[in-house]
Length: 197
Length: 196
Image 1 (cartoon, helix red, strand yellow):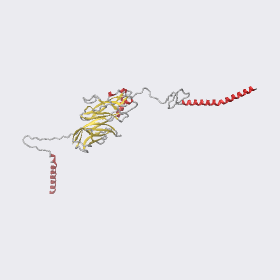
Image 2 (cartoon, rainbow over the protein chains, first blue to last red):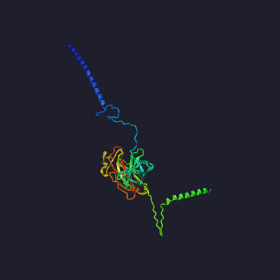
Image 3 (cartoon, rainbow over the protein chains, first blue to last red):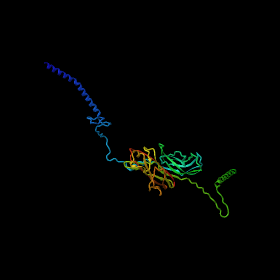
Image 4 (cartoon, chains in turn orange, green):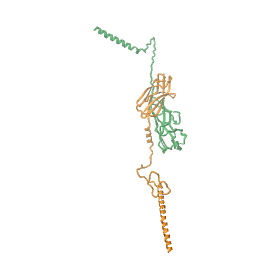
């Protein structure tokens, strides 16, 4: 009789023990589930092992195998560089050519600053640039013309510095400017004679 | 009637007098040489000569292209035409790297670099650009066959062109190949022309 009671008591205690363990088991299971979820989420940024379910492809790099975006089409055959003739043709279109008409002598009745003299320069209408001329004596500009647009010319210019009487070999510089933007394009020099009476 | 006739005669006489008076200055420079036997008369002839117009057609900018993959330098010929009535001398006064492009090169001597070994930075920095007169292109005999390299400051007298004749020049270059994009670069070429 006492042994039966003892057995009953033992069973009851074991049942109680089992009942007490269940919450712990559930908590551990929950923790494991949580860990698994965290692991899955971190798969996008780490590559230690393959992810069971890869996230959809995006612009950010992923460990998944890239999939081909099979839209659009490329040109058939090898890529071909432009031919020498095509390059030459493109370069020739960029070239600006001018025709200058410059009198070989500029003459002034005296060498005082402000004296008007004669010198003819023409900017033919076939040109596409603005010209501006100056006479340079010993590295210094002694006279500068007004801007000469295509189809225009000058007959003379004024001394901006005093020049002693005499005959000099000087440089007439023509500077060229873009007709629309007025930006500097280039220049050319002419050796002419400067005569000051 | 008589008075009318007198008036008409007076008018004719006055007109004749005026004509003679007006005609006198026109003969003022005339000189009468007199003498016996042979008479010598000196006549001065005054000439008035206008300066000649120098006219030349030439490019004011020069474009070139470098294709690193093909290792080619392409530039059109530079043509200079003499429209003057007489021959003109053409001189390359300067050829210099200029700003305005996406690259501004530094001109160096062609022997200054191992061109095919230049790295990215040096390819975008250095170039050896030269200009030479093309033979059989209109230059009179005696034209310069030497190349004017942009690194040199001294002008190069190219040669003489007869009236209505065109002469050509060509560009050549040594350059690197390491370019990481499409670039543009400018050089300024200045000619000088004078009567021969």
